[in-house]
Length: 321
Image (tube, rainbow, N blue to C red; front, side, top):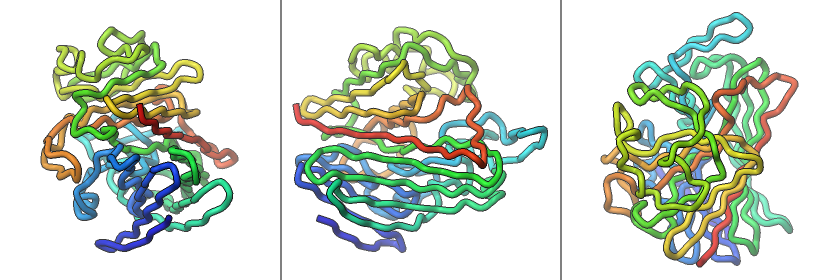
């Protein structure tokens, strides 16, 4: 079943399949507004569309041109310096001001034997947020007719050499109201050291015990350790580097989510800030869910050539336990 509606000038598409999956998309940021499965919310979501419009609300949105943080507000490409529109204490977070998360995408919907396709597109003009060259991006969502899964495919082409790293910024709660009963498993033996005072990245290192999720463990088991509660950090907001064919599993007492991707890094963030955000399915003010953001390793060269295409996927598969 497909339902389309408009609210606050935004276009929404709700898709319900035969496997009990119910996903609502929004044209702002080509967003996943909410995911429900077997009658429970798998994501914690904005209370309404007005909340989604609020500045620096990334819930479910497509993040780009570059996911994560760029230190400072300048990048140098082939000897030329570009000044980016910084939005976090002089750094560029999730693409900076005027990023993809703030843009209204064009959309089209079609159905075939594979399921329902919701496809969003946007042309980012040269100079937008300070980045060089035009960037044409498509976000392709597929909801199969009879499977409890959601496939996201990102495609981007640029007219000039430019850093590109796209992701989705959904927060998962798996039917709960907070992260207290969530367990996480990530196949990652390395992470990126971070300066806790300005949250800038340094170098790769073996995961310490509090960041070792190679065996499933509770998100709150080590969340209060000193090392991740100093400076501007007050919980998890870290980059893990996936091992070969790395995967992610999140579990609540009732549900399990398997995430697969061909991207090589994962940022996971335990909703440590923004107590003023109003959610539709939680009265808690913080740590209502965990954002799991597959993306390109920020220590590598993320420059996309005009002759190449950024083409990557994230697949979410939901199960009852």
